[in-house]
Image: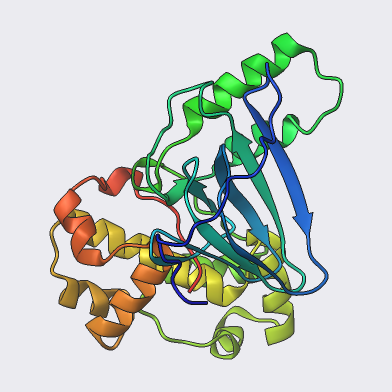
Length: 274
């Protein structure tokens, strides 16, 4: 998918949220690949909860891959195009701009913690009293934070074999062993490890390992470690390969994260996918 040019003139569609509600969530389950042409919304939008397939959004000149653990925030009127692969399931939550101050005026990744996910899904309920819904909406807005300052838990598998692998990779993200090699050490077949990893973390082994590497990289970058050193420490043979994956995951370069200085080691965000 090519970058979306800002000069494209696309009319803004009708509103999706009726007063007095502040937000609404739509569920999309795709049996086949689907692509939405460049368009805009009158509301802010959070695209989140991706599971089961590829979900790519082009916005602000950047191609974003939306991971299961985060969401892409699109401010009202932002021009964007979406492409989702077969078997993809995800959510789109729309926010009425005048209801609350926008947490960001540009497209960027937001943390979607387990609690925020449950609150947004809780508001799927029908016939919820207005007062109860208003309380839930305020909680949701309070939890909306850009990914750089969102402390999101890292899911660990519960199966002992998969947990053995996960703990080893967290301790040493640069470990290059394949899942078949890990099976010789951890026990079980590749098929079994693949299954229990997916069941325990909600993602594939490859996705999870990339998440661990980017998470570790953020810690090093926050400490001021040079990008060339960080790339080796998290398992990439060249800085260019690391930069490409990092930008694909976060929408930013490693250098920009160092310059912003907003990532504290104790509250490093949880990222994945490449």
